[in-house]
Structures are given as C-alpha cells and as structure tokens.
Length: 294
Ligand code: GLU
Image 1 (cartoon, rainbow, N blue to C red):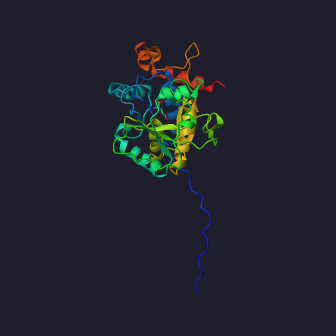
Image 2 (image 1 turned 90 degrees about the horizontal axis):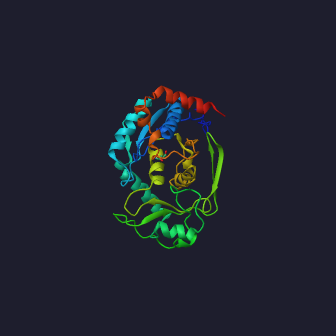
Image 3 (image 1 turned 45 degrees about the vertical axis):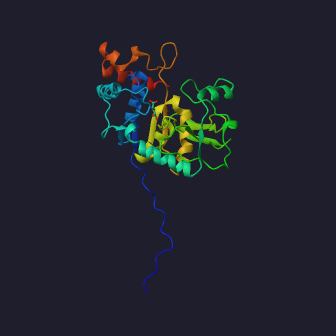
C-alpha cells in the first residue's frame, strides 16, 4: 500500500523578493541638491541590498515637463555617479496601463466623477490647507455623489476629474523605514483625491501605484514632502488588491533660510554647482556627512 500524501504541505517560507528601487524625477526643471541627495540615498540603499534600480521619467504633466529636462536629469545623475539598471521608462508611454487600473477602480465603484473646480474645493474646505500649494485640498464630503448611485461610464476621452472615494475616518498606517510609524485618517487628513484629470491624463497618485506594482518595486525612497501622498497610495494598492512596497521618506534639504529647495533655486542646481567647479565627489561626501548627523 502506498502511503497517502500528507493533507497539507508544511508551510514553506518564501524568500523575500530581491530589492527593487526606483528613481522618479519629474522633468519640470533642473535637478538640485535636494533631488540629488534623495536619489543618492535610493541608490545607496539599492546597492547595499544588491538590488536593482529603475529610472522612471515622471512626465505626465504635459504643461510643465520639457524634453530638455529629461536629457538634463539623466546627464546630471550620471555625472554624480548614479546609475540605473535598464532603459529609462517614461510614464507618458504607459497611459494604457494606467487607464486599465482606472477601469478596475471604476468597475469596483471606488471612484466618482467630479466637476468642481479646485477653487470650489478650496473655498468649501474653508481653512487654508496645511499641505501647501503642491498638495490637494481636503475634498468636502458634501460634494460627493451618493455612493449608491450608478456611475456614469468613463467614456473614451475623459473630460471630468475622477476622484477616489476614501473610506471615511479609516486610519491608514505604515512603518516608514526611516521615520518609523506613520498614521493618518482618511477623510480628515486627506480627502477624495484625483486619479484621472479632465484633460484625460492620469494623476501622479494612480500612475505611481501602477508602476510600483508592474515593475515589482520593493522599496520606494523619496522626499518626506510625499508622506501624505503615501497614505493615498496605500489606499490605491488596497483597492487594486496588491501589497504596497516599503517606504523610506528622506529628509528634505533646506536652504540657508530653512526653506525647502524648489526647482527655482537654480543656484543649487547640480549644473550650476558643476559650472562653479564643485566635483561630484565633494557633493557625495557632503551627503555622507549629512546623513551621519543624528
Ligand atoms: N516625480 C515625483 C516628484 O518628483 C516623485 C514621485 C515619487 O518618488 O513617488 O515629486
């Protein structure tokens, strides 16, 4: 008699997937020291884990992105000694992938069309929102359509904003690899956010989540200004039925007045520093010293 096979196979521990990170500059200006430091941290973490690094060109914002900056950012990264492991991926080539994810969210009733302007939202939100000019104001709950009402079709060409309906008062939490535990409450700290714009382009929130999933990104390293977006993105991963990567939010580089470096600080653009005779080595040395500080 042959022995019958065991009813259940013993649990096998699956090895963790190899580290995959990404550098995701937006070609809306020249890279400055702040970007460079974040990308250097991303690169250092990927190399330390013997992982790979993707260069992603976040070029969805047609009004602000310029091809000259795409070339400049690659050159500047290489000058600094940062490399990536396969041909650069441009988000503008992947619109069909984002559209498919949008269709899934639509089929699951997780989004709704919104014809309110940004001004309407800001005025209704009342208090000035703390996220700053780059962040979305809190979407007023009274602007939402009834959740039970059937959704209109997306249509071939999208001409209204579509927003993700956040689960009210649900706490979203994650463990940041640098900052430790982070939590925010949906509907209070951030509201229904845009996933597709009325000019028929995907939002950063949706595109980045689809890309992390499809490129198998295991850790996202980016600036701490994006922490609030991470909460939004965690909800999208969940709605799409996928696990999120780990996150490491790097501290922002401030100028001597304590303000965030924006792209207008051309004085701190890598190119300007380079033209002034700064070497890549001295910049990397500065980063090493800064990150050693407590
Ligand atoms: N392209 C985005 C930016 O420059 C970064 C997005 C990200 O790392 O998720 O702000």
